[in-house]
Length: 133
Length: 120
Picture 1 (tube, one colour):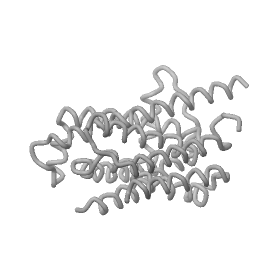
Picture 2 (cartoon, chains in turn purple, green):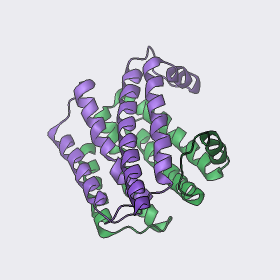
Picture 3 (cartoon, chains in turn yellow, blue):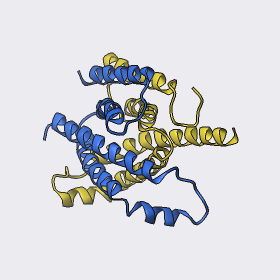
Picture 4 (cartoon, helix red, strand yellow):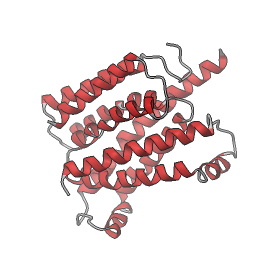
């Protein structure tokens, strides 16, 4: 029982870290890429872009995302991890709307909400996450 | 390179990376964090060949994504790349032999519809 509870909280904590680090990482990456002096079109220019401050911050957060997701995958099913952490897609859309001045149509919001609905449905299913059904 | 070509590269390489990563991490077993054990854990993981291959696919996906967000909306690029999720749910059942119940299938279907709406 104690083991189940520990795994349940560990799973929730890591799912939260995965979602937050993904949304913030993508936001800083997009912000950095749009403010480059020249568009990267060769391996060398991509490497140069990686070391600009905003892109570097975005990549650092995406490394946190990658490591926390890998850890989560070591005890939870891929078919659970992927949909639950897809909440990050919604967080990304919100970041684009509020901080990158993106115009998001009603249709795009509807699509994003459907992704949330799918995520909730999947989260209620039985899975190998230490959580009861 | 068009936005759709970049998206195809992102989705294809993400699917491959996730399958390889899940397979190798499951083979390794649950990770437990202990003081001073992280370096040993990193060294162990760095020797896993499927994990190395997964990282290469992730790199391809990442550079394509970098290029995509330079011009495309984040609110478009990120949700549309969720198309990989539907493929991965199917492949998790077929390749990884995971038990995927009906709620998860319906969930994956809703995500697919959501992606289609965002992409239109």
